[in-house]
Length: 155
Image 1 (tube, rainbow, N blue to C red):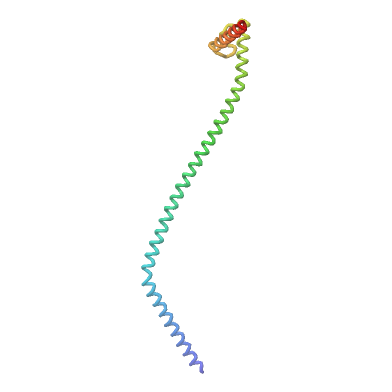
Image 2: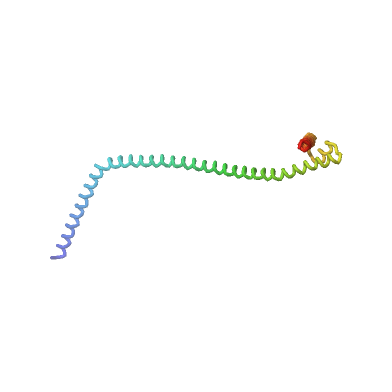
């Protein structure tokens, strides 16, 4: 075997290989032309449907998350309001407890000043009360004393 024969054989093999590649490319090309429009349109419509479903799901999720966020804000506001009301309630009960003792002191002060001969207007000005309150305290005291006097004299 000579080199010329080997080169000739190599050229023939290369040509056969080239023809086989060209044949395979043409076959693949025909197959793609036959299937390509159907696959592309079908795949494209499925892809569109998937995108539309994804968009709808995302919109729904976004709406639900906004509702949850609004509910969270409303709960936070209600919690703050409840804390404020609790503090106000605690403060009022403290005021009532301290107010009972201060009312008792005012009651005693009114009786003491009245016993010293001060007029109702003077007592009202000193204790920063109205004359009506002073009259009421004194009337209640008189009524209480009359009831206890009549109760003691009956027994």
